[in-house]
Length: 361
Picture 1 (cartoon, rainbow, N blue to C red):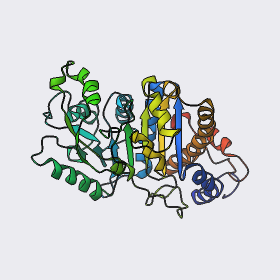
Picture 2 (cartoon, rainbow, N blue to C red; picture 1 turned 60 degrees about the vertical axis):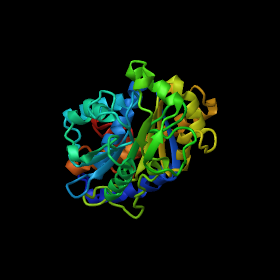
Picture 3 (tube, rainbow, N blue to C red; picture 1 turned 30 degrees about the vertical axis):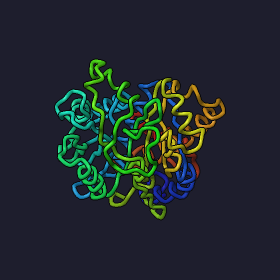
């Protein structure tokens, strides 16, 4: 600290890092998280804030893009709407973000209202500033489908891997079109859809089974599991604008909402890894966050719910303190001038930060 009435960036960085760095790593490294929110809207907002904050932390630029894996379906819709809201409010830009969608039907024209191209552009991409060339979606009409899958994997590799892979699941625990029985080390490939999947998707095609595609292109479980792992544990300056933030570490975030997916969530976290429940594979990822609503926890043991509810609060609070301080000091060291970081707890620091900088992290 410098003087009684001022605060030096370097001193704040050193003191906060010394006090909080070990706690952050112990709370996050090598852990599986279950974040439980009251309802779908709150779960969507939490997920959107998490995505927003990770992109901001990353500080993407023309020579350093943030790579984001994205799903389709009803579950992520609310999250996309919140991200659009943040973009319109000027809170985030997607100019230097590359996205990679999980799947696409084979043989369905891109302009078809049920194609995943249509879903993503109508519900998200056309409302933000992402460049079309940076929005990668598998081409289900490619002349050579196998080559298309290989090219998609190559694009991910050329982008440096996926920083954050967001996924949703079905009631049977499938992620993307990795249905029960899929290899847990599978890569992007052509998949013949199971009868149950075709029947379930018929509602989007006027309940006419003959109109439902029977094949799809999908990323593999192994593709998602390879979401990059890039935490720099030697990094100490959380205010640096040229290197990764202390909290920068890539992960998988799975969105699960609704009572109809409660058994899948149970299989995902309370039982062992099982190829018949592909979502269970993410128990093996070093950083997985399951974000769910209360309805999705109905099949979980009471002690499981209590454990995760009890453990998520200090984890979120600790990350909240570091992140809000990071963005505040980057702009200006107001609200900290009269805080002695060495003597005051993180709760005092939190109370000095504007409420509109709240974050779920």
